[in-house]
Amino acid sequence: MQTFDYLFRPRSVAIVGASSNPDSRTNQNFLEPLLVLRYPGRIYPVNPHVSEVMGLKAYANVRDIPEPVDYVLCALPAPMTPQLMRDCVAARAKVVAMFTAGFSETGEAEGARLEAEITEIARRGNVRLIGPNCLGVHCPGAGISLEPDIPPKDSGVSFFSQSGGNAREIILAGAERQVFFNKLVSYGNAADLNESDFLEHFAADNDTRIIGAYIEGPKEPLRFRRVLSRTAAAKPVILLKGGRTHAGNGAVASHTGALSGSKQIWDALCQQTGAVQVGSLEEMVDTILAFSCLKPPRGRRVGLVGIGGGTSVLAADGCESAGLVVPPFPAEVRRELREFIPSAGTGLRNPLDSAADVYWEPASFARAAEIVARWDGIDVLFVMLNATAALRRGLETMRAQIKAIIEVGHRIDKPLIMILRTADIAKAEHMAREAQDECLTAGFPVYRCYDRAARAISHVIGYHETTSHR
Image (tube, rainbow, N blue to C red):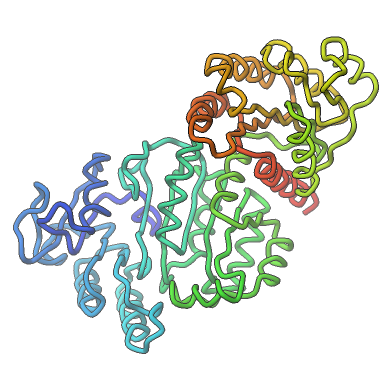
């Protein structure tokens, strides 16, 4: 087995600092998820003060465990970690994930000294180290999870994050949109294994089609650039850079102790390597969703179908601001639409602002969308449904609309993107959530506003434009 086999498919896990108190943070973070997901390997709680933890035999020291452990999770105080690393070396452990904080990220000499010491012990003893100041691995298919309530589902998406909190948030936010992560690692201070290692592994991993990352500052900038350029040529790499501003850069120093680098440097890096850069966790999920669901569009021309004059104006603005093109419909398309869409209160230029009678008649609205989609002058179809307007009509009406549009999506040869507007109204959000699940299950990405959808599809188009010329 290789390092990443021990990490993502360990045959045994030891949790150092597990407690007889089931509500302890260590148990909740690490031991309980293994039990919930019925981890198939062997679990070894380590605590010299108890004989049993959550029904499992406890060991006083990793040296007492009857086999070399593949994956060790450490939740001991920082001053105790050098001895733990010596014990792991003696026990021939393979990988240690150091949940413990209090190292170089503190900015204090003692923390930096401790980090250097445990790293040197690990390297001399041929033990690989993740962290410190991290949550370690999330690989639900192997029974290891940071969020055990999220069901294990194959997705082809892998992620590495310098922040444990951001790692957890993206797992939860992704699941809301049916974006699941095959493999994810929170790696903290990156004293040993770092972002270049994880990127290189995911590049070679046949189960990974899309790679996402939250990075505050690479440990080996030149190596990272080389690996990023090589990887982005083969599969999408979506980067969220923490510390792009002066204030953010200062926060990075106290979070993971990383050297952040300027926004201009990262902009140039992504431009040169073909990596996709996003500005928030929300945009990260939006973009992963688009890459997951959509085949590459042929170009940047979009057709917009919905209802409401003002909404149509804002939709066109959002698309052009994201670098998309909104071409006017030609006379033949307008003539075909005019056969069943009245002149009063509508707009047939692109965006298509359909009449209320057409919008609320699922077959007619779907017909309008299909006419627009068949036109050779667009590459992507956006369809907007308004959940706030549907509140008076009821859920069944929206279900019928969704069903009709999904059928159109299966017939056309262009990417279909759904917009479900809710204006943050709770009742509308409840209605939209069910509709969203139907669309996602059918394979069509769903967004709450044109702006977010436009940015996501623009990232997909930009990536394929860049890689096709490399």
